[in-house]
Image (cartoon, rainbow, N blue to C red; front, side, top):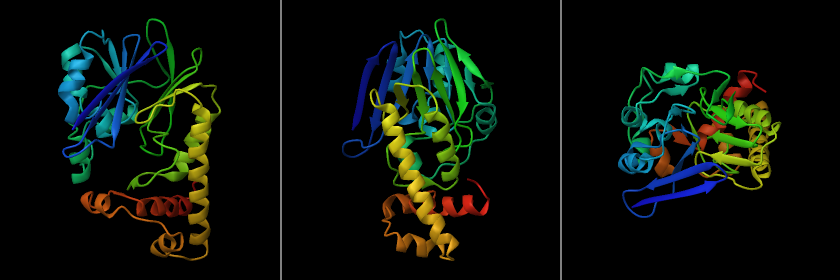
Length: 274
């Protein structure tokens, strides 16, 4: 089943896409368009619908928030169709030369992610005709991830920093300590709206992101305390009564799991990350 939806908030157009082979989609990705700038390109399983939705928008430039397949899946197609430059953080440009392989679960959910070798690095800001967006590094979920912040309009395009006020599983390479630090950095900004890559918050945005921060901090502290007492990762998982989504874990070959959240904290503690 395919679900598409669009909404407008102030000058920002949001495009929502969800796809699932059987049944109603449970995961959605969002693209945002404002003043000639398209933020992210969505996943390849909805490519035809993304291309159709992009027609007539007047896309002049594209900004990729990070290299994950639900943000870069239609990059090549949209760049070719609109003949426009595509920008990303320097690290994202580097990763997209030869992106890491996807698990079966990721391919089923989001589709493939082709390499792209002609992204243009952007570091501090990106400008449109009417707006200037600060680019803020927010590593943790992905090392190359950036947020866009328009201080005059108090808009935050948060990529995958938020997703939800709680998290059920991590990718194997995520850092919880870096996510906490990135979330704290963003919460210092003055923003009213959070255009999230999966779950936009058009009101009470700071309150929702603060809930996410509290969840991460509590989880980190619980795991770190048990690790410092000498508990193994499996023992910590058991003592905290955590529940694994075995379907996701097995289908992803372990690349996606709640167990990865425990391992992330242990890795961060051992690397002396705050």
